[in-house]
Image 1 (cartoon, rainbow, N blue to C red):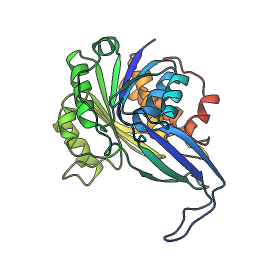
Image 2 (cartoon, rainbow, N blue to C red):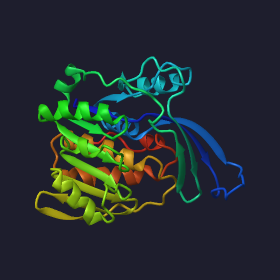
Image 3 (cartoon, one colour):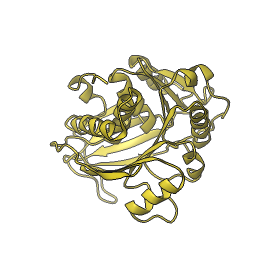
Image 4 (cartoon, rainbow, N blue to C red):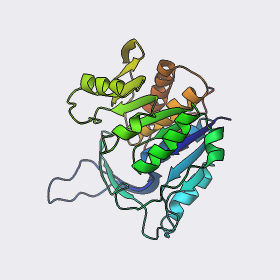
Length: 290
């Protein structure tokens, strides 16, 4: 069983299903509501675990009553927690998510900005046993520490580039592969080609730019091209990018190539959009052989 370490954000998501998003100064009645644990690194870790890997999550959770939801979810999916702020007594990061009838979503989140973490040292036993490490850029100094420790052991380090965060350039020196959304725009970049050149100039060897249901643009060494995303009737796109990252790590950790791992992960991420929430897909998508 391969070990993957996922460093970054954990949230508690309060999700509302609505017919349409409310306009300014208006309210709408939700068809349903749910509370679930989310965040890029967390959803990726859970996907990795479901697909047959052993996952460890490095994040800030704390000791509040509501944080027990996170602890319980991680236990359910057999994920080891390395808590960066175990004594934090306020609620962890909360997100309010609206999903419309077309599967589109709006998100308001406190993210990681309000939680102080201790940088500390990495867990050497985890690093020594890991086949792959993913960082999402939240709790940036901790991402840098874990990425540097993994890179020193020649362990694959993957960047989940959801959006640019100040200081990310200092993380890139230890990143082998970056899988970024179309919203990931480093300083001075205004196009996909700009982003690719920026990442290549920082030594990132393998790059993918995702754009929802549109083709994935990739660069791997001297090769480049696009991967078509399997088209499905989307019920909910929430967490699809995170699931793609977790599935990619599953295949890459098992030794599959960059492009093949991307293609297999895209199939799983697309399939997840056929179901509501970020867990329902697991009932329909069985663990994939690596």
